[in-house]
Length: 88
Image (cartoon, rainbow, N blue to C red; front, side, top):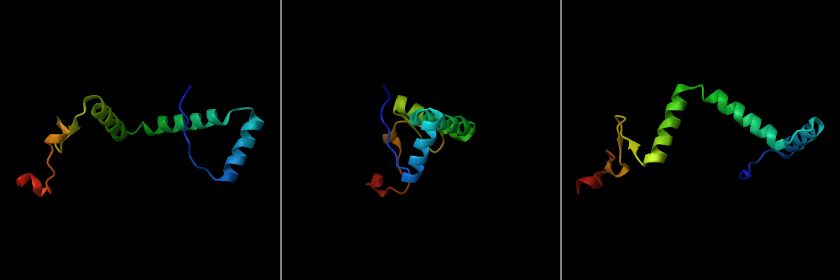
């Protein structure tokens, strides 16, 4: 079984959605899943988004982050330029 996700939608919209789904004999969950999957398919056509998602995946898997030059490094090695404390 998949985990439950909650989100807020206006009451009138929910009631109309429920009625339309009942009329069409489809589950509300399946329609929401279909809409989300179509949205993902459309948005993942963007190369910049795909680079971002791959970088996030690498961060999750390795614990590394990219420095301003794009090199993968340990997070503790990054020093913020405006952080005066590293000069102490």
